[in-house]
Length: 211
Image 1 (cartoon, rainbow, N blue to C red):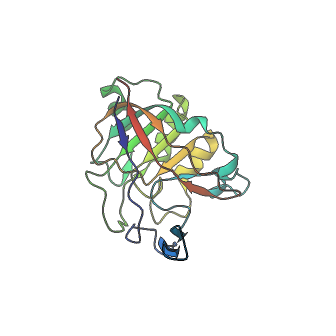
Image 2 (cartoon, rainbow, N blue to C red; image 1 turned 90 degrees about the vertical axis):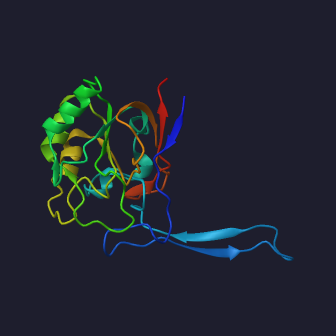
């Protein structure tokens, strides 16, 4: 089995939604004559890099990230490549891509929309049609992941895709790095940090080949 890291590097250069908190790090303690260790302080948005949205992010009464069930973040996962679907990935395109890898009832679906993830903020990233999420829910899907900053377009005020996830009680991974991942079936391992009361949390997202 091979482990594939699908977590982008987090640094001050990590692209963020305009207005959101940029990552920064400060060395608080340094190894020296009077100190035996290095210790740093970091400042970042809960939606930096690869992260899991909690229901609280899109539902004022939703659970925070420390209260969500971890089971959806670990288990068999279908990765599909849909790099020509802008501005929205449709239900039919996902269904066709799943059929091509012989998956009919996916519990977890990760959608690759970029050939290479951009190093700068991309206002026109590909989003996911809410109807596609409704359909995935009927197939038994528990988690959807994307290599973009959001399931919804950057300018969305209605959050249709997130609300489709809310209705189906699914889970979301965003900001994944899928540049070198071929379509197929893998094991996903991507539990979020246990951050009390928060709307999202970073993940170290991994795929493991099934054979």
